Length: 157
Image 1 (cartoon, rainbow, N blue to C red):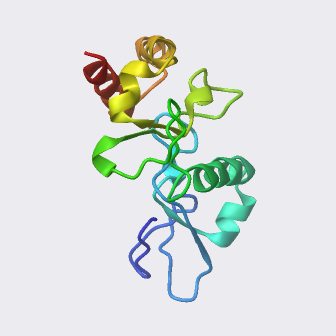
Image 2 (cartoon, rainbow, N blue to C red):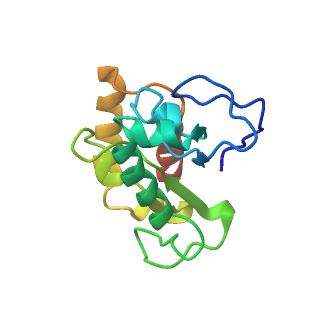
């Protein structure tokens, strides 16, 4: 979850410092694509009124609720075997890749995998193909997607 230091943290919407007594909304870091319109809210604290009045507020609520409902303890089930993933060293999460009507990768949002099962994942080649297309088209900014591609390709070897 975002850290909010009263008197220091600025609201990404209005730019003003969040003061003691201000009602706030905090979001975990969950948007992976730095070019996604929701990225500025990922890992942020906002004034509640700023957030409620922002045109992207409803979309952010939907995306963040999906994150909360599909990740965390008891929700990490491998897409290959269906078992809950308990070993953090054998875990790969494909996080929030985009809004379903805007991103071809969104069908993979919150996919959980045992790293050891990646070679068995029937969707690996489709994911890699789409991910590489998104990168080539300039539709992605930041290291997260290249890191996922690298992790999946390394596991397939």
